[in-house]
Amino acid sequence: GKDLDSRLSVFPEYDNAIINQSAPERLIALQDIYQIFVSNVMSREIYTKLYLALLRSLQKKQSILAVRQSNENSKMIRQKSYESIIGGSDSFTIIGPSGIGKSSAVSRAINILTEVPVLNLGNTNVIACLQVQAPADSSVKGLLLEILRKADEMLQTNYHQNAMKSHPTVDMLIGTVAQVSLNHIGLLIVDE
Image (cartoon, rainbow, N blue to C red; front, side, top):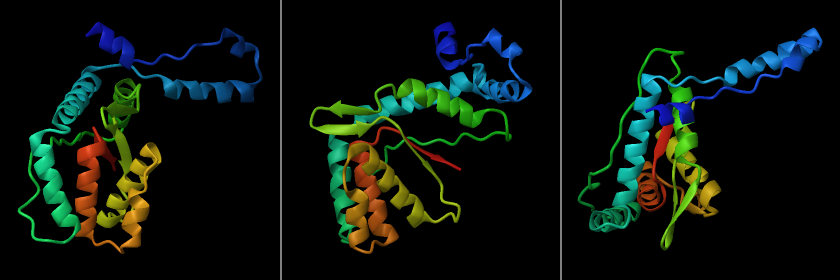
């Protein structure tokens, strides 16, 4: 508990020499107050949820269920008949009043969990946490393409470019993103 609170909390250094600076310099230095983060019950719960979700995700990589899911994803990408997306994914939503620190708590937890942003699991690289913004127009296709683009950025791959070559449908993109997530993403966070 105390160690986690200590790691989650952020208290920037205070420079006493700032009191002798000009008013504009003091005002600029005042921006440091936005870096302060004090751990609380909510931030500990968010960290725990994210930690356990990442742990479960990494345990599922390259399992028999993952291989079966991969086969179903391939059928979906090729627009063949497929049974369904095999379950087993963990998901949750963080909901609360605006301004209580949800995004800050998620950001602090991610900083701690992703000290190594890309993990090497034998023969594959896994992004510990991929964070994307939901498109302003609420487009499913835009969100799926953004996930591929960000994954490419971190893995130096060409999933986005390859998807764009085929004039993808949403169904094809769902299959592609499911496949990339299954193999290369530990935790996917979609921010509003």
